[in-house]
Length: 181
Image 1 (cartoon, rainbow, N blue to C red):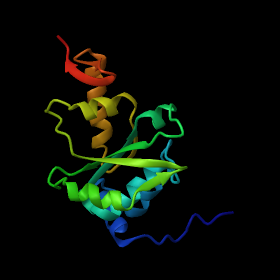
Image 2: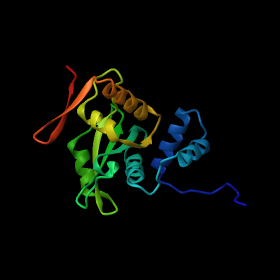
Image 3: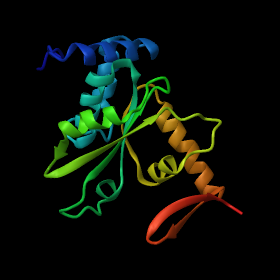
Image 4: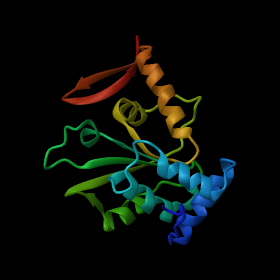
């Protein structure tokens, strides 16, 4: 019979992020990790886990979430398709070209597909969702959500879409969003 114990070595920055997240959730680090590992639909070897691990090491407590979206998530990827990942950071964390360059120097990939990482600040629940959030709300899959904010926000955006408040249109083959008239 298994003992139910194992020892795990991980980068100090990731340990700090997990500890801080568990504290904010009012859980012990052990309980938080058990829940995270037991969460249905997570794939610890998938592209979302790879992005979340690298982002946690790079941003620590500033990492809010990781969402996969686009053709790969929809099951429509071709051999030439990339995997789109949205890395959500605290609004206080500046998103600069240097940040993108740093990630471009050491690109991630999964099963021969490049992982295209996009960075955004934490959305405001009161603000109008931008086109990125509207696109992600259609088919996004949350790979990491530090405190549930991302899932709640995507639910809010999906409700706006379902109510007809936002309409997706196409121009020259490219989608764009507009308020319903």
